[in-house]
Length: 399
Ligand code: MG
Image (cartoon, rainbow, N blue to C red; front, top):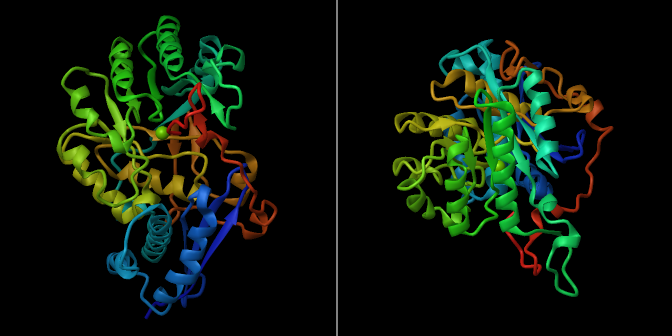
């Protein structure tokens, strides 16, 4: 019988962001699985959950029974869900799928039903302080073969200190003027369309920073731009505002990266309030939860665009791409770019060619973890300034 013999969580920081790698070992020589449990802002809490709570629960159990182990991990703490426990669950679930693929001698996309496409189209970021800077970066991506580009004039750039209407003793953080953010981004998109035409697919992430009525106006003013999608226009807490938007605006809507429960997204899909699902697979419970989500979304005409930021390991990125290949309702894959250190620590990281992301055909996810290389990049203390956006008068905004 195959048994789990050990589970470890490793925090490493090869690309300026703390990431958490889970390794599940078995009693079979050379057989182990790797998963991504990254929650960079609370990484020690996730690592402790994995090693102190879940490790003793899973040792001695058969790693092939993924669904049973998933249910057990989900309810074993009695209170369930949230970013810490679901990142831990998601990372281990991913490692179990990696083991299953290695046992079968198949890439995970084969276990999920086989390829619908050879590679996953990815989107890249073009962000800058003004529309000219955004255009320059967007044109560079286009010339390198990328057809999907997320364009942003970020709030911190929209409001230079000198133009802000400040109080005398403001708090620390990025201070900005949300309405100026709204205006400058609309102007930027008009400029990009004028210069690049309509062949390029343009995306934008509003990061929930606008008040609902301003957000609604933003979506309507962007309607002529014909975005591929507009993301996180409202916070999950203001999700009901999507009903107002859907009856008066055709801008495609993406949402979901902030969900931390395996079914938190359900109401958006069944009520047809979004066009693209952005859930972060490890935050909702890993491959097992994410692939269920993708299949339900397919029935409602919603396409998948997993949340794939830099605070995620290449194991997590590869896991997303394996799902991308195996679902018919794939939309686009986020790709933040990676430095050489990340590729050194994670041999087998997906490769990008002409705007498409390719996974290799090794069993499991096909990504390794060089622990000796990882030790060169230990945990780094981070001041989370980007989650401290503030209004002109220093009131906290959503990040
Ligand atoms: Mg986002």
